[in-house]
Image (cartoon, rainbow, N blue to C red; front, top):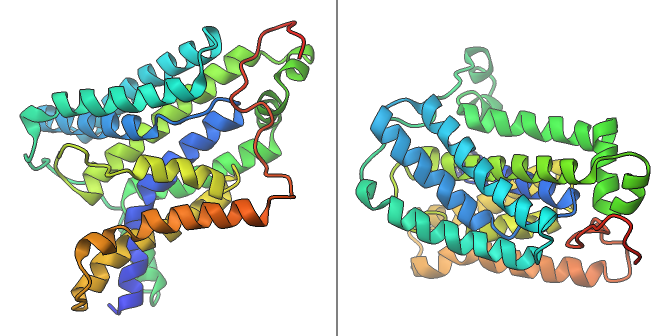
Length: 309
């Protein structure tokens, strides 16, 4: 395969965990809850997948355990932010610190042990015959296809259904939504938990397809990139797809450049996606300084029924 095709395949592989984490962040923030705990949730998802998959040898059980663990963490974040009305930024940062520390502790027994297998691939023989496209999409794993389908489902859910209308109403004006009979707390709990589960699957995808063994700090800051991508995508699932694959390509570019015999130190090449994240956010902030940002208007604001604002 030529360099461009290889880069596309690598971009999809590296971009899938970013896409899942970004979609999870979009669900959280569309409901009005800031999600800064993506890094910790990804690490907990990754270490749970490793522990259960190595102990049981069953990938389905490992993924179910990952979803369950991160759902509990999402429930905790919801309880703090929705019921106790704690500071959402501090709660998210605490989730990152908690997830980072606990995953490091739990992962010590399995550190460096290879997984029994990787994410199974869906072989599409009829598609593999198509030039270029067949090489890219004809042999992708199930989690990648799941993330692509999820983009379409969430886009339709948010923009074409009454459930999505309720979600956007809660994120923009929870008081108005409450007056219209929408259960604000239930919606916020539901979408924060669902978002946490998707972020946990992002960590599982990393350990299954990107680095098939557990190492402390496996995500290397990709949870924070996902937080930036939520803003970069302007809380839109379709935009998130292109943003995640774009940054996945940047993440893979450094390694591809090394294969071409570049003399640039690898440390500088690994900095490319993080530097571009900062530059893109700066550019978008400057370009859209006089335009509506698309941010949910009640993002980060706790809702108290009958409180006057």
